[in-house]
Length: 339
Image 1: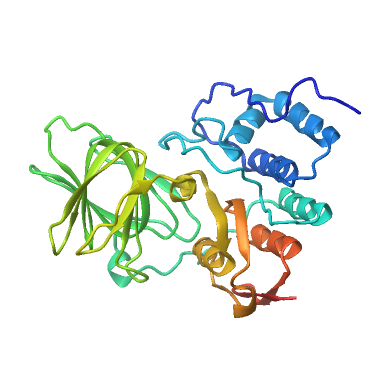
Image 2 (image 1 turned 120 degrees about the horizontal axis):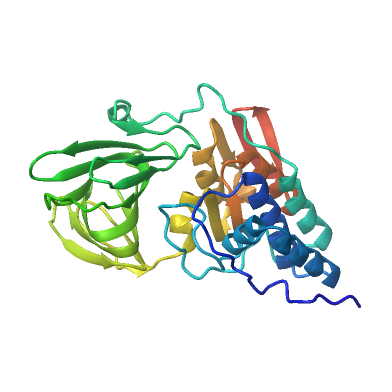
């Protein structure tokens, strides 16, 4: 039997420069992760993966992020919590042929088509926001005090600085904030319709979708934030490594930070035994048009790490590994149904 010179699961972990990694390299890493996480990988495949990782430092950087072993892919994101074992797709007792076919299907697909009208409709009050993004877009802005804000898909913020405070209002969507130091010592406040967040030298994400729910989701990667509800004036200090949700009257009990809450900052959607109905709803945030699943497949479970800039590739892989088919009524009306 062929043996590798080293274990393909052992990280080399080259120094991570913090810059973005090419989509093609990330996709290759995802394919190798899916192969090795399939449960039926051969020794030859483990050796081939090891050779691919050793071939270029960027390969190893992508591999480390895909398997949760490395540092940040992008400046302005914190390291993720120790992750679950992740592949592109996996399911209990999935036959080898179908698992690898699903993974390889992702590898051959290029960048998503960009359409002029791909913006997801935002609430009316967000259409004239100072900064906003369209469907599937991510944009980083640097404010006058050095604060860095990454906007996720279909997100909108207003910014107002004066002599007394630095106010950022999240109208809709999700943001990653890396708070800058202010020479005037003005407090920094992130306001939402359900309450506010005041950082204490920190890096954190906030998600707020008022058309769907009044809940505001907060995850702290560094430092801490002080949360205050709008109506009841309840407060909570949320420290690094924790996440919670709140509405206008109450704050949930904090829980440990997980991968899913911050993976979007690296262009990934992380699922761990997520219902297909919930997964499709989340994936639909990155794709223009209607995307849904029928009731008879809604409870199928999905796990893995998925590139959100290739939603149609993910749909194609789903129908290869799960007992479902993707029905395109039109390019913009898609339904997942049982075979």
